[in-house]
Every structure is written in C-alpha cells, then in structure tokens.
Amino acid sequence: MSEKALASPSRDDVAPSAEHWTLRLHAVCSTVAVMALLNVLWLAFTLLGAVVLGIAPATVAAAHCVRERTAGRLHRPVSTFARTWRAELVGANLALLPQLLLLVVLGWNYVAYSAAGPAASAPRLATLAALLLVVTVGCWLPGMYVHYDMPRRRFLLTALRFTLAKPIPSVLQLFVLAVLGYLSYRLPPLLPAVSVGAWLYLSTWLALRFFAENEARLADPDDPTPTPDERALGLPSDPLRMR
Image (tube, rainbow, N blue to C red; front, side, top):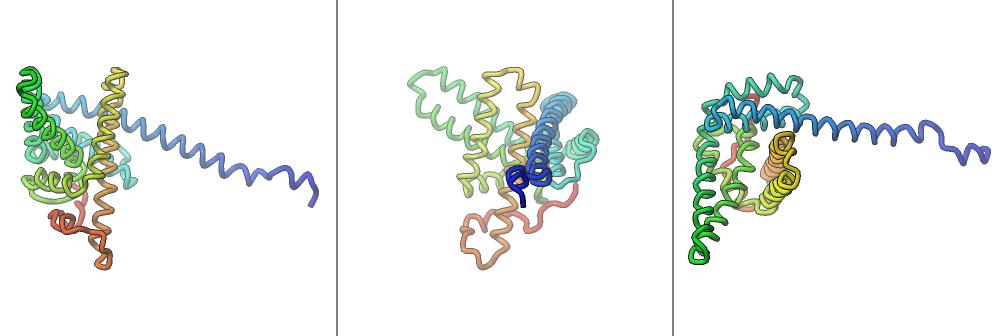
C-alpha cells in the first residue's frame, strides 16, 4: 500500500462521523421544535379551558405527546394534543387539580409569612419546605398519569410516595425546573416561546425513564436493589396502554 493511501483516509472513513454529527444536530433541533410547539399548545388549551379547568388537561396532553414521541408514534402532535385534552378534560382535573390548588394555597401562605417579617420565620420555612415538596410531586404527576393506569384519586398520593422513595431523581426534577425558571427570569421571551414546553418535555422524559428503571428492578427477583419503599409504592405492574 502506498504512503499516499496511508495518509489520506477514504470517504467511507469520514462519512459515518459526519453523518452521526448531523443526525445529532437534527435530533436536537427537532426536540427544541417539539418543545416550542408544546409550549404554544399548552398556553392555547389552558386558555381554552379558562385556565382553571384547562391547565390540568393541557399538561396531561403535553405529557402524552412526549410519551408518544419517545415511542416513535407522534405523527400529528396538534391533533394528538387536542384529542387528549378533550378526552382528559375531566380525568386530568380530578387527578392534577388538587395538587395545583395545594400549590396555590402554599404559595399564598409563603407570601403572607414573608410579609410578616422575622416573627414568622418558622412557619415561613415550614411552608417553603412543603411548597418545594408539592412542586416536586407536580413534576412526577404528568408522566405518572400518562404511564400508569390507576384510579384518579391515587395519583397524588402515589406521586408523593414516589417523591419520598426516590430523593435523587426528585432533586434532579427540581433542578431542571429551577434551571428553566432561572433562564426564563433572565430571558423573559423564553417563557411564552419554549420554557413551559421544555419543562413538560424534560420532566415527562425523566419520569418515564425512572419509571421504566423502577419497573425493571422490581421485575427482577434476583436484584437486591429495590428497597421496601420502592416495592410498596403501589404502582401497577403493567404500564398504561394507549388512552
């Protein structure tokens, strides 16, 4: 073999890496585009439900779209979102609205205790801790709702138990929310453009990943990793089929 042939790599040696790089870039751009679309759809359908009755089904619809996309089944995101929103108008509100109302109450109390000054430091810190816990539970709820089939009244308690049994993934969920919140604070145009859709996408994706890992460990009788708390979560053995 000549020295020229040794020094110059063939086209076949270069093409795969270049193709891999372009595929990764396309995947990132496609994901950002889906986040932006979910952001617009979530805002529109939340307003369509007069906010109070629209926010829960819009959140569930976005989580369902993320679930379908990760499974490679999301071909018409707008129609999928609208169909899911309409189908879950009652069920999503029954499952998610209590957590949202609790979040509003705790937020209101925290503001009130903060305005009261140093005399209310203890109840303010306790309210802050409860507020962070409820926020973290809310990060798990949309993914849990679209992944598991259980009575609506059980979702909030099961998400709370999952949050306490999985502190590290729960902190990761809270970290993602904090980062997106900080970026939206520094760059306000992100909020109506992509922030909500990005949080819904990332929180649902993380939730589905952790649910799948938890199910895999629980299904292996020889794996000593699952703790009694994990086995007592009360999650169905089979994930939810298409709603």
